[in-house]
Structures are given as C-alpha cells and as structure tokens.
Image 1: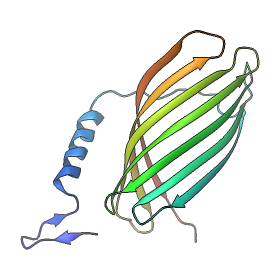
Image 2: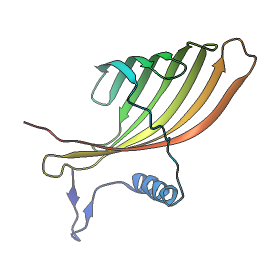
Image 3: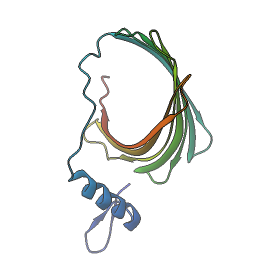
Length: 168
C-alpha cells in the first residue's frame, strides 16, 4: 500500500491523483450549501443493493428502492440506480451511473427524474479498525412533470465522507 523511497519520503499517490486532490482542496475552500429538510422522520424506505464483481478491477452495482414520504402531499417513489465502478489503485476508484426516479404524487401530477452522474471515491488507510472514504461526484438532474411540456435541469456537486466501524 505504502512505498518508502531512498530519501525516506512516504509516497502514497501518483502525481495525477495529487492533482485531483489539489483541485478538490481548491473547491472545498469555497462556501457550500446542503439540503435543509427537518421533516425526515415521516418516511418509509426499503432498499436492495445488488453487487456483481466482474473482475479484479470492475464492479457493477444495482440499487432498487421504494420510498414513501408521509407529508403533504403524500409521495411514493420507485428508484433504480445502476452504476459501474473501476478500481484504479488500492486508494482510488472511478464511478458512473444513472439514477432513475418515478414519483407518484397524491395531489398532483406524477413526475420522473433522470440523474446521470460520474464520480471518484478515495479510500484512506485504516486507522485502528476504522476505514474512511471520501466520495465526490458530479450529478446532472433532469426532471419532468407528467402532463407538462417542459423539463427542468441542473447540475450538482456532491461530497460525502464515510467510515466503517466493525463491532466484532
């Protein structure tokens, strides 16, 4: 995983990966916003995540979800998310996929959302028994309300930091 060179320098990443981190660092110094929705307790979400390892470098994932939002109006969602992952190094993988959402809206017209995305995931070395990972992705959003003549679109950057802590 780590390589020490003659001069005693610890080298973890190649220069291309270092450039990616520098770019992420520059972006992280700007003001950011997140979603604010304080009413998250009134929902039911069931999800199945299927994974197929194609070979040592490629993995195909498929998420299938059902979501019920008990708000005004009540919304039922069906979500499909196929994605492909390419492991470049022990620390870095590239990802891409498509997020398909159909919204059944009780008091209004139904809606469809299509969200293609690309991203990268960075895996940090384990500390004690805790694994850390960072994800950055660019997501396109294309939304259409059934019965209307227009599509709404936009783009979002998404960042997520996560960790796994085993209990055994």
